[in-house]
Image (cartoon, rainbow, N blue to C red; front, side):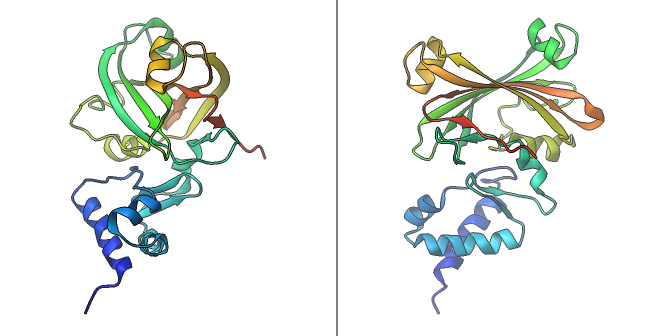
Length: 236
């Protein structure tokens, strides 16, 4: 008897999780991409994802995509997501990590982290791609090395949701983040990566991330294309 098509999709995703090709915090391929790759309808893909979500193997974040989860994932990890399209709608952004290293903290960065200049830090640079696989943002973050020792290891897979692996591997609970929204213009490096002209406008987010005991453990600067990227929040 032929397996139902949704089972084919379900087993495809399960296998990728079991083999470690997808880990907690990873954004799975979009429904349309899975539909094309497995030659099934989007409705079939959606049914498989619904089943895996009920089992808590996946976590669907409305408008931003579906992530590999853990049994104890909750919505708190996702409250830090704040990116959208230029019109303010939620968007699915997949991140790649082209560069990471350990370094002595620059004075300005250490000031934000409230540590002494030269304190060992881990620097991570990530590029975010939209559903059309166009680069729309550059994320640069500095972490206290004593809190996430080994995060710079290039053999360690970094999921789209970086905080997931920080909690899972380093047992560090992210409790809150402070963000400042401002504007910037593209320098040569940023313009080359994002495929825009030097001097074009950017949206810029400055973030400090707090963990257990309200320690500041990360300082992050995210620059996004102003024509394809926005910041959206809700005040209650």
